[in-house]
Every structure is written in C-alpha cells, then in structure tokens.
Image (cartoon, rainbow, N blue to C red; front, side, top):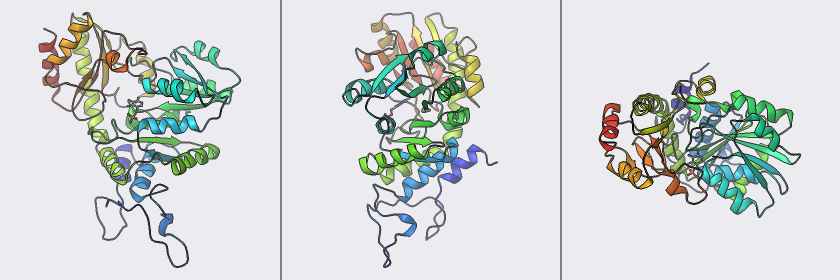
Length: 374
Ligand SMILES: *Cc1c(COP(=O)(O)O)cnc(C)c1O
C-alpha cells in the first residue's frame, strides 16, 4: 500500500489538466461553463458547491485519514460547527472538559439556543464518560492530545463504548495530524481538522476539514451544510493547504523530535513544575499515546512554571525564538499563555505556557529557554 508521505505529495497534485502543470493550477473562477447538452465537465457548476482546488484537497484528506469523503470548510470552527449542525434539537453531546475552548463556547453561546445540550467530562476517565451518557446522547467529541493540557484519551476504548450505545464519535485530530494519528482506523466515525495549523503549516491560511467514514446519512447532511450554508474555503486557501500537506511529514517528524528534546530538557529544569508532553515517560497518557500515535508525539507541549503570572509573562516575553502569539503548527515557534487568551471560562492553569515547536534548530530553542528561565 502507498505510504502516507507519498500520498501527501501525490494527493495534492492535479495532473491531467491542460497544459500539463506539475504544480496544480489555481481555479479562481466562481462559476463554470455549461455544455450545450446541459451537462457540466466533471460536475463543476459553481464554486460554493465544488471547485477543482477544493476537490483536490478533500480527496487528499479523505485518503490520508482513511475516510470515505472529506469536506473542506473556511476554518476549523466552521468544520466543527457543521458536525454540530448535523444533529438536531434535543440531542445531547459529550465533550472533554478541556476541549479546544471555542468548542465549549460554540455549544454554550450558539447551540444551546438551538436546543443542543452538552456535558463536559474528563474523557481520560471512561467511567465518568459512561455515566454522562443519556438516551439523548448522539455525539461524543474527542480531542487527543488535548489543548492545552495534552491529556490523552483512549480513542479505541471511547469509540467501542460509543458503538455499543449507537453514539457517533468525532475526533479533533488537529494536533497530531493524519501523519501521527488516524482515528478512523481506531473506530471513529468523524475526524475534524483545523487546517490552519499543521496541514497549512505556515500560519498564512485558515481552514477546516471534516472526514467521514461509513455513514451515507451523515455524508448527505454535512454536504448540505457545506453546499447550502456556504462556509467554504477559497480556491487559494485550498491550494495553500494542499501545498502545506506535501511537506507535512518532514515538518512534523522534525517538530516531534525537537519537542521531545525540549520537553526532556525542560523537565530537568528546577523552575519547571511540570512538563506536559505525551512523549515523556512521566506523562499520565504515555502508554496510550504510544499505542495510538505513530512516528512521534507531535510538536505541541505545555509547561507549568513555579512562578506567579506576572513572572511567567516576563519569561515568555524574554524568549527570542518563541514568538508570543496564539495558534500553532507553523514553521515558527510560538509561545502562549492560554489562561489570559481564553478569558474567565478558561480551564487552563494560570501558570501554564503552551509551546508550538517550530523548525528552528533545536539547540537554539533550548538555549532560548535556558536564557529566559535564568
Ligand atoms: C485551532 C484549533 C481549532 C479551531 O480552528 P480554526 O481554524 O481556528 O477555526 C480547533 N481545534 C483545535 C485543536 C485547534 O487547535
């Protein structure tokens, strides 16, 4: 079988168009010419419904995640929203207590008014999860490693529990990306990505993707939400994400390696209270992460520092190679104090900094922390 690294290169290409370009051409056209007999070439009618650059990206993502179909959206949250919109009023959703914070906000500020109820649980505890299930539960949302605490959820265990109760499972696979983790192989029905992060990889595009396996009913619903709701990415956005995917494997392998080395170094530093990185043997989810993540533990880690918030912000400002900004998954290293970004509903500890490890030389990155922690 073709390996993922190869699929990522081939899938992003668009050979066969004329003239025969190696790099995919950009189809900015919002509309396509109708043939005399009323048909459309390759069923391209109007760009909200389909576009060659979007179709290329969607096929590539379905292939990389092992799903049947993928739908691209204008952001990770637009993709997330489409999954919630496929449910109906009265349905109940279970999310992890530290799910990406906007998921909780979306449920409480938007979908509550539409009659969706939800419960937040510590998803690393299967008993707590099982107890939260009620007859209206239609969806279990998984995020692993979670943001920003890098909690590890056993995807296989949660999906098999959900199957016995006829509940759909959706995994936000943004952090590991399809290179390191394939939730569909572990039993998930839906995979969601913010392609703004590792897929795009250069902090210059917003995007989201939903990948679905084995549910024609759900596929029709998400397709309607994408085509009729219209939260779609532009052709250029799709082009950028496809280009990012071609280098995903080399980026993420290096970022995983550097994150591992930095995590090991930080763990030994006296000012560091705790390093949250699933690649460390001291991490509570190390053995589950080793089972379900392949080829690395990703480029994200969080640290808790034995200092007050003021000093912690000072430390992060002193870093030279880690830029203080939100977001993650780009070629550049970023550092963020999640608690102050997320605001009063934040589940993030106040003394936590989240790091997105970039492609700078790891010795420089370690030196940067050595200086900042002095
Ligand atoms: C960034 C992110 C999102 C949201 O994606 P956007 O593209 O910003 O809308 C969702 N989940 C995770 C894990 C993320 O990191």
